[in-house]
Length: 193
Image (cartoon, rainbow, N blue to C red):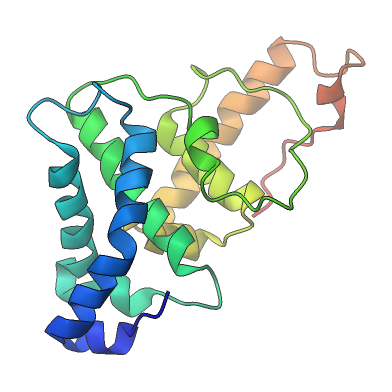
């Protein structure tokens, strides 16, 4: 993508139009992965959620645009994470169940990376947001500050969600036999990243 972030931050209408034109297909695809057909929030069409993504990017004097760092993630990863966050928030507001993020995450996974080897985490064990945060931290290798910027929340929110998720995982695996010779034995549930 050939995007001029500096011009977008300055409010250049042509640069913003080019930004939207080059990212809209990815935004739509990301939202559709989180909100499968027929499960978009009542009254909110995909177009409404696409608009919400771009509003979030421009909110607070274009804060997300200003904070984007190309050395930390690609534009595709960055915009996908924002779109997924908006879609997840919309579903939560309407009380919808969320599909497992493992399925939605495939769009931003590096195809050369080996499939993760570790325990299968039951879908009900973690919230969708906790799964997303753990995926971003542990599988994508992102820093807490980068995840916070991508999701538009404070770093403390990310640390708190991670801590709660890790506690749930520790409790689950201690109750369900880590140490029984299964592949789960190779998993360390520490607080790295």
